[in-house]
Length: 136
Ligand code: SF4
Image (cartoon, rainbow, N blue to C red; front, side, top):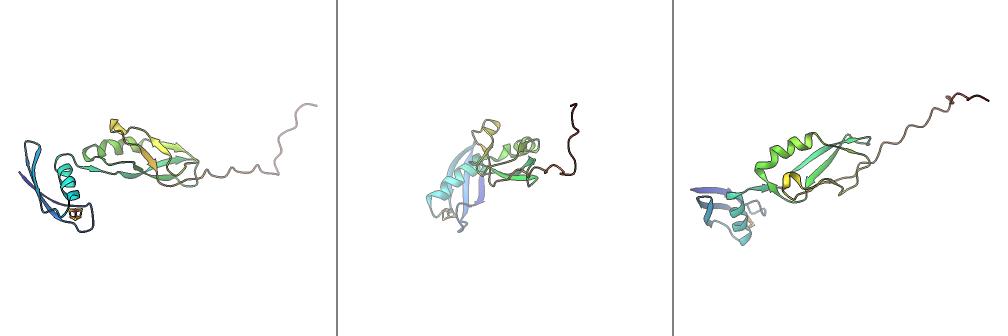
């Protein structure tokens, strides 16, 4: 079976043809460099992507923090991982690069914050209201 792919490893965008038989890559053509062959071999058999999404923040200046996986993960696991991420929340403050979740679905990948979210400033006590005095 032949598959046609566009190489996304650089802006040239070579049109690749990959011949696959019984789940194995037999040949790759159309690539101008070895990176294209490596991309085609992976993409034809087990495509991977870096997942970028967001996670709910509790008590932060923003309601969400942007996150991404620290490495490409199998594309077919992305729907399951998105379900997992939907149920996640993290307490503010969130630091840039903070690991939100380790070893996503046993892929070895971490989910990492790509920005910082400070904690919401604490509400000052209303100076007109004083706690009731206790017994003398
Ligand atoms: S095969 Fe090489 S030159 Fe062509 S798009 Fe891929 S990385 Fe770029």
